[in-house]
Amino acid sequence: MKDASFDDRVMYQGDIWVRIDTLPRLLAEGWRRTLREGGVVSVVRTPFQWVMASPVIEIETGGYLGDVGLYVPEVQLEEAVAILDGPDGE
Image (cartoon, rainbow, N blue to C red; front, side, top):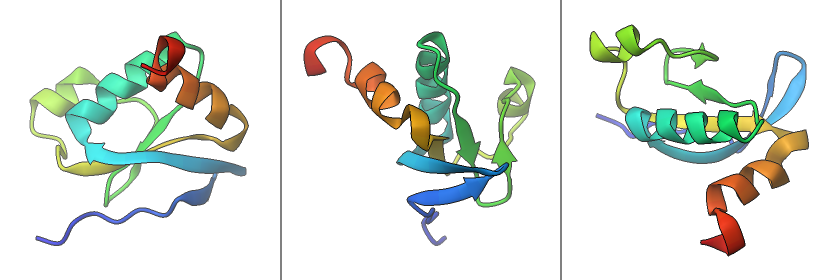
């Protein structure tokens, strides 16, 4: 199976979004929770669709678990990187 490939910058819902990383869906969902707790909006892009909200039932029932693109709005990019880097760049 071919690896998922996602653009670094995309137009989504009228705004520029920047890809933070490409990673397995379960890991991306954990990062999304961390970003949300820090006040940063994020979205996951699977090879099939954009996902703004990922209900646990979708993941538990066999929703797409392969590599996804994790995106944040360009205006929140620095904030997102700071949150994911942790205190003092850990």
